[in-house]
Image 1 (tube, rainbow, N blue to C red):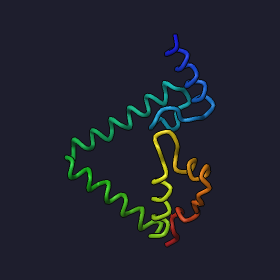
Image 2 (image 1 turned 90 degrees about the vertical axis):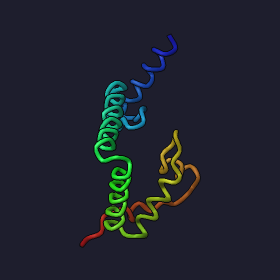
Image 3 (image 1 turned 180 degrees about the vertical axis):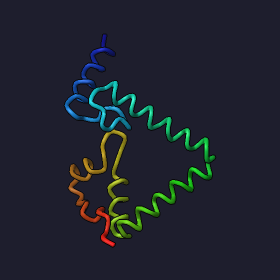
Image 4 (image 1 turned 60 degrees about the vertical axis):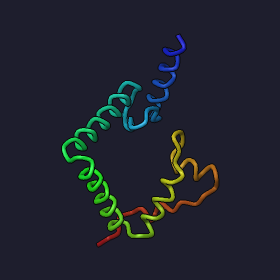
Length: 113
């Protein structure tokens, strides 16, 4: 009974737009978020199997370099500061707000070329 009640509570939160499943961003119900999270995880695992561990790590590194080139060194540092604040139950933005840490998200914007 408690399990069903918990799922109903999570489903209600999801229907209000809250992400209740890690990786379930965008799902409009608990089930939808679970499916999104599973699909994203499976997609990453498939790519990792195709490339092998070294290739998959290199791919991630290239993505980071590309983003750093897009937003510049200062923006990339600010993004890392926010990410470093995140925990399993709170995003970096939530934690920064709670603790009064200033994060300048304007630095995240892609620079004009």
